[in-house]
Picture (cartoon, rainbow, N blue to C red):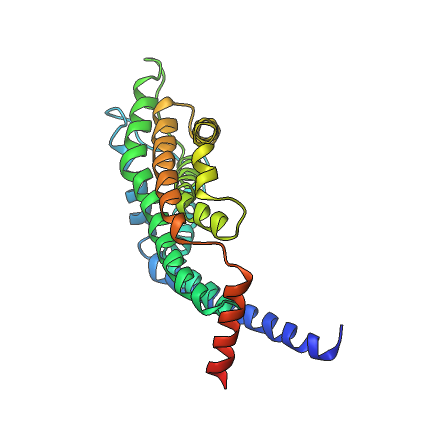
Length: 256
């Protein structure tokens, strides 16, 4: 590798390090601001289960340090979720110089919509999936079984569902990127719709709790989002050589 080729690479690595540090600092600042409210945040997250618990039941901690560390662990995850817009902004700032002019106009809406869809997925899990799933689990338990959920295990359970539903709602963005990169086309995806729907329900069966409500509540939104993604993918045409040359000439004119 020549010295001229090494210098740009080192410059990109330095910029990447700088942007990663900014993301970490942002997460830490949000975490510090939220630490005081860590117990309140855990209560909010646990509320869907607490409302469904039988009278006299409560959540428990089987580890002596769990009441202290579990809310802090949750707050750290919340800090990451809250920082996602800034993290995506830093990603955008890093990749933007490598994009052509028409690509910059297309990528920014994708970043904004992906952030919104991620939050919508988390909200859907909290307000729709949790109440139905916890109602099903608690009311199907044997009569002689006392339901006292461990706070650490509950946190792991809800965080898994948050991540699953958050990323599941990114389906339209994934479809648009696949079509934009030329890997597939909206027409091809529509032809494969029956197989995709079957695959969606199969995946939902493995990534959700073992109840039919959670599986359906994940699979149906994904199917709807699949249709939305194939619709909007029509406006994101795979870039061709001519567009690259035109944009390259335009950037050269602007720089001169």
